[in-house]
Image (spheres, rainbow, N blue to C red):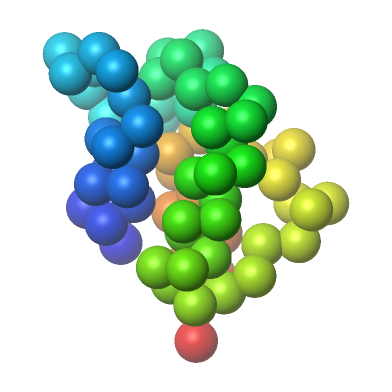
Length: 75
């Protein structure tokens, strides 16, 4: 799961030297904007065939948060 998430995130990070870990903060460490976050969430929904409710999005702050949510909600 982490590798799939990492691959999607890597496509949105302009600095190829940034290491993506479970503890990486999406905004602070990976320098993703709010607009990029919406796009990325949409990609996760398509890739994993799930729907992420809008109320959940503010609680997704790290790569680990994404992985945990996807693991808990995958069919």
